[in-house]
Image (cartoon, rainbow, N blue to C red; front, side, top):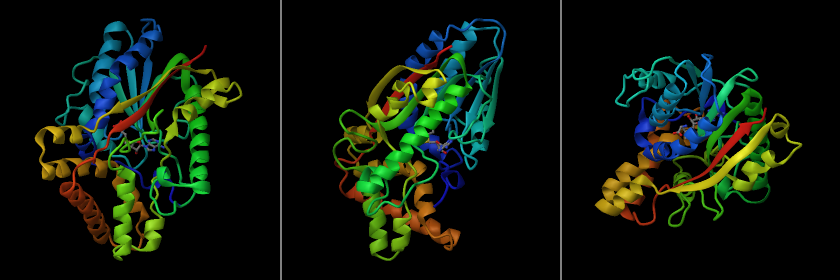
Length: 366
Ligand SMILES: C[S@@+](CC[C@H](N)C(=O)[O-])C[C@H]1O[C@@H](n2cnc3c(N)ncnc32)[C@H](O)[C@@H]1O
């Protein structure tokens, strides 16, 4: 079974943040939550280094607006303190694009030229491992990334995502999700300084059972599975390739997110991590919203499918046999996304990727 770190990366060269305006909106709408958490840290303006992290940052484009505000806030509030910002993601991430964005070589406005004494760095270490030395991080931020598990526990019969898994297969994914989340929180608890904060905007399952692309209407992961299965039925991919295609993701419920924070025996709790705030949020798919106004099915399909492709392509690519030449793989993927696009163009009603997040803020108790 593939390790996620061996193949996972959002589509590079800026494609991810260009195509994924919803993820950016989710982050921007959380700015008041993040600034509130920063203010509750009651930091002294004592000239010492302050360290913040953006974990699972992709190309950095979607969080740039938020960091401009938050770093600007820190700069005004604590003029004497240099700030180190560490972007983290998996080794295959397009870190070059990230640095181009930070250093104003893309069309996204960066904080870098605006603010003094900000020091950006990057780490390619998975958030399922130690990234920082103990007690050296003031603010751990992560958006739309914690649903990635390090490895899938089993193939999912007749589906490509754990939301479509049943019985033992579903339980196997949930168990990995539970263990890796407990571990991830314990790792962050260790890294945070006393009084530090963790702000995570997580994909998850809300109180109404809704999750990404499954909020009424056409369910996105069912569509992914249906079109991929269609390729298998026609022989364009093999049955093994269909079976080997499984998103390395677990969507957790609110209860699952907060369980280690309520359990005095959990490693995170024992390391001092305490729940400060939890809420679920629903953001309507920006492309479906625009379609409701412009009503052009072809345009909707052309705008909508790239956002799906920007994050899902590596999973479908990883399901294909390694023996296939690169060009053939790309032809299959192009054909797959073209089918999804054509289905949306032909019958656009109900399609959309609404975002469901579980926002979580924790403090590290002294
Ligand atoms: C959907 S993108 C979110 C990017 C950005 N944070 C945002 O909100 O737009 C998920 C990111 O998490 C990264 N990721 C997945 N597993 C990871 C891990 N174990 N450690 C660090 N990053 C990971 C992926 O490579 C990807 O860049």
